[in-house]
Length: 330
Image 1 (cartoon, rainbow, N blue to C red):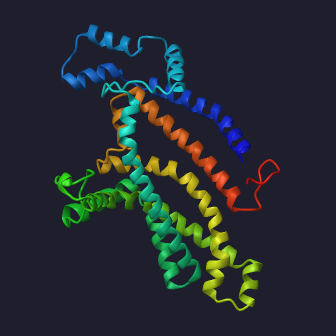
Image 2: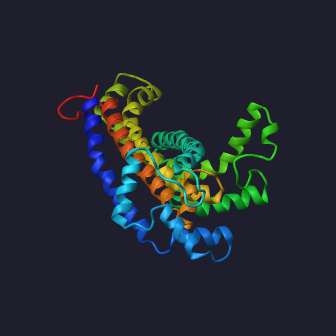
Image 3: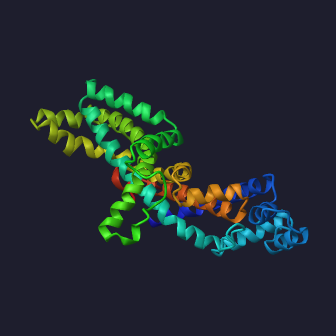
């Protein structure tokens, strides 16, 4: 298994270099000078061109693009993601502050996706062609089709503005520091409820449809028919024989789900003012903060590679029919 993982990691290096090159070129080809925008936003007036030129020289923006690219790649290889133009702080410290908030959102959305999606998929498959099955099917298609940002705005309008059940934004209440530890946990979950629901509901709808179809396929297999012929109850047939095999492809899906959840979190964090990496990336794009844009893009690319690798390894571990390089991963 170690050889397979090392081989995949080595294969990912040219891919990441290609993504880095394309991202660097796109960021620098976008219109607008980052130093002009930064100084105008900071001082709300025109700034002496000599000051702007000094800043441009400080950040290496006066050098040719190939030289800037070579220096940036070299620094990234050493773990230095540069300094933010906007915040004038190391990008690594900015990302370190934002990552916990994004992980809270993504992990809980993933848990919501698995819990609701798999449960609805099993119910829909077991009660095939019933009213419950049709209701779950229609509901899944509707929730999967609704744009996330529109759903987020509607939920804020209904449950936050009109009913006042949930906060409209932010991560904590004003009296958060005065709360006990359980109170702080509940307060954070209260603020996470709407963002997690919006981020996870579309994925849960897709999972429910996939789980239903896969479980129906497994229930028609000969070994399941044989289990029924031996007199096992329908509950035992589903839970002990069919469900485990139906879950194999579901498990691998979650290896690819995290990067997509992080991508979806960009809009959700913006709508709910959740201070995660997505909001940081959106603000950086608006401010032409090149180091932050490049760093967040590369982190997303690395997560995609890691997610794919996790999916491949998990699939081989849970399914004995799969092998890589002629050998089982064990």
